[in-house]
Every structure is written in structure tokens, then in C-alpha cells.
Image (tube, rainbow, N blue to C red; front, side):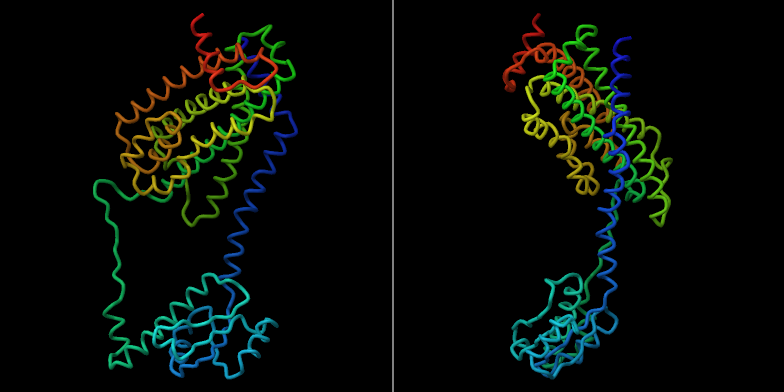
Length: 401
């Protein structure tokens, strides 16, 4: 079967290339570095003690402030030296900040903090402690017991108890979300690779040689299967590495068995259809491109929409059954990503699954057929890139024949 020959050739070309090996090993390394740096910085900053010199012009706030900060990473020391001298100490890094409390602070004024940085989590701790100290003085000045008042106005905690569905296990959410991200990344990489290959082969007239021995459908479907196979081999390896890391990094084990087989099967089905839909759409644009200069706009248009569900993943996880998510699930551009997320965090009604699968399948079949028709014309058109209107006319005209 010629389709399989094209797929095998495309797969072997991708796997044997240096770019494949470089991407396979370098990408996880970059991800690991990018993910580790914020954690390392956060740990370093969180464990770092801050020494703050306090000039208490009110004569009342520092004692309570220092007590409130006893168990925090901020150490407050009283200072009698002039501000200029303390600022010199700050420049020499002998202290981390100078807090100046003027008399008008007790009547609604502001405190001044001199520091080498713009702040961070420690600044919030200092602000909370100072606010509490000033509030305590104001209460005491009016004859109230600050501790008693604070106990009466303590924040009330609310614990959410959902009705109709259980709160999802974090492991049950992390696993499908991870799969959705990997599949979307894989679809993006494979689709863009396919797009670039079609543009290059058209420009270098290689497509003409291939189409002398295979049909346009065999050419298109073979490239989709071969390119996808190579890219998803990379994604499978990355997923396996991520799974091993997650098992060691999290305090609770994450197991693939926590995702029911039916949901896993549906996830793969949505992904496969979404990948074919995505590749067919990019193939249409690739057939009309004369050179790589036109790739950016076309790829940008096609790629942004399927990524929208990932940007909304936090909101979808909290309220997976909102009408807006159901509506987006019916639009083929968004169906794969949206349904992957919703399946992971809720029980989606069977009629929604059946409807979205039917609509996505129909859209994919029609778009693949349309892409083959456009390729039949576009691969032999040279001189300039085609507009969207011209691409539509090519496909419609080919359908009428």
C-alpha cells in the first residue's frame, strides 16, 4: 500500500535526522532547567532572613511589631542612628531594609521602607505585622483590649462542599491535564513540521516527483501518519520521563491506572481526530504557500485556537460543566483540548461525548478531503502565495469535478 510506504519513508527521515535527536534530548533538559529555576529561587528567598532596622518616631509601635515578627523570617531591630547612617549600612548590605515610622502613621499616614529590592513575600509579612501593630495601638488608645478584639474579628474560614459531584483527586486532575498538554504539544510540533515539509517540497519541486507515483491522498495521509509517528515517539519518551519524575517528586504516587480505561480510550480518540483535523488545516495553508516567509501568519492563525482550552484549564477544572465550556466543546477547533480537560475532572454526559465525537469526526473527514483537493491544485502552483479566498476556490472547484 503506497500510503504506508510514504508514511514509513516520512517516519524514517524524521527519526534519522539530527534535529530529531537534538529535540528529543535537549527539550526535556530545557524544561527541567526552566522548571527548576523558579523553585530554587523561591526556596533560597524563603529561607533567607531579613534584617530590618526600625526608626520608631511614634514611640509606641516597635515593641509590638518586634513581637509579631518573632516567628517570621524578618528580624526587626530598633535603631537610634540617623537615617543617613542606616542607609549607608543598607548600601554596604549590613542590613536589608530601614523602616521609618513617623508620628502621623497613627492617624492614617504611611510608613517608609528603604530597601535594595522592590519587595517580595517578606514585604507582605512585614506589612501585615505592621498593620496589626498599628491597629492594636489604636484600639488600646481608645480603651479596648486588642487581643480580645482581634479574636472577635478573626477571619471566618469557608470549606467548599460541592453537591452533585466529588472534588477531584489532585492526581486524577494532574494526569489527564498532563496528557492533554503533551498531546497538544505533540500535535503542534507534528502539524508545524508537516506544514514546513509541504512548503519545502513544493518550493523544491520534490512533490511533483512523489505525486508521479502516488495519489494526493496517499501523499497527504502518509505524511500525516509518518510525521505524527516520529513526533509522538518523542512525546511518548518525554511523557515516560515526566511520569518517572512525577512519581519521585510528589508526596503521593501518580498512576496511569487512576485514569479509567474508558476515559483513556476517549482521550486518545479525541486526540487522534484533533490531530488529523489540525494537520489537514495546516496542509491547506501549506499548499498555498510559495515560500517559508509566509509561514508565520498562517501557522499563527491555525495554532492559536486549538491552544485556547489549555489557557483556560484552571477555570475548566473548577467549573467543568459551565455552558460556555459545553459550547466550546462543540466547536472542532476547541473540541479535543476542551474534552480532554473535562473528561479528566468531571463525568461528561454520554450525549455530549457522542455529539462532540460525531461533529469532530465529520469536520475532520470533510477537512481531510478538502485538504487533498487543495493539495492537488496547490502543489503545482508556483509564483506567489495563495490567499484564503483562492484556497477555498481551489477546493470547491476540485470537488465539482
